Length: 284
Ligand SMILES: C[C@@](CO)(OP(=O)(O)O)[C@H](O)COP(=O)(O)OP(=O)(O)OC[C@H]1O[C@@H](n2ccc(N)nc2=O)[C@H](O)[C@@H]1O
Ligand SMILES: Nc1ncnc2c1ncn2[C@@H]1O[C@H](COP(=O)(O)OP(=O)(O)O)[C@@H](O)[C@H]1O
Image (cartoon, rainbow, N blue to C red; front, side):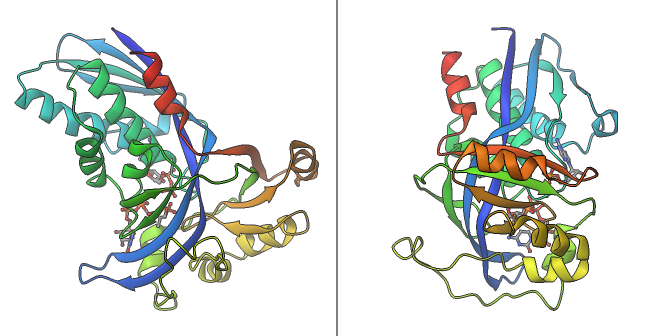
């Protein structure tokens, strides 16, 4: 095999409850990660030398801080310890809004770890790849395992759950929310009562970051006010994207058609298993 094309799907946080702050400043949280069927796409082309290159439809993303290159570098160090010398030309087709709480960068990193593990025939376990991924971001293990899941800790303790798959309209307001700024803000709710797996589905769901982000970025509150007229709506992650859950295509399309002209939105279906797992299995 000399080349591989794989998806890197988005996620929603159907709820996000912050249950405490750790001594290292990170926060313990509980969240329900819903994987979606929409995302970026990556193509990996094997190189015999040890060069790693990145090309992308968004030229601003071609730099060494890109999580794709960071993931590739991390994995290449392990490959070299195994005596394997190989490189890769990587093309990232960026389709997801960035910095919007949809996890696109983390998902790109996970797809890179899994894709290069296959292309370089490293045979690393999913557990090992998830551990490596956690060094790159709290959401990377979710995308490595590729299962819709209830998560605890900083988001790395994952319990897969099968949810009724719904349609979502996702709208990304034109503003920037820094994850670090939200987690260091004095007004953030940090004392939510922990749920258990048993009472997960019965308990009311919220996003503890949402009131703060609505206050700091009024455009987020305005977008939610618009969306909630169509269906129950919430913010994902630390924002700024918001989503509404619809029972069918027709009602989701109706809301999308009425989206103000200068707003960005798309429809996606919830999936219990990432299309990445099926795409990788197809290469066996
Ligand atoms: C909170 C979530 C929920 O999905 O938000 P989104 O990024 O999706 O919006 C994620 O876990 C975020 O993951 P990620 O964006 O990878 O965050 P990281 O790079 O690991 O951390 C960025 C910064 O956020 C803070 N942080 C992050 C996660 C966490 N559980 N507690 C924290 O306090 C830390 O200050 C850290 O320096
Ligand atoms: N491959 C990538 N795709 C998107 N963003 C990336 C990537 N690599 C690094 N980044 C950086 O990570 C930030 C957060 O990206 P993203 O995962 O899209 O958002 P979020 O963590 O809010 O879900 C971006 O603003 C960008 O600076």
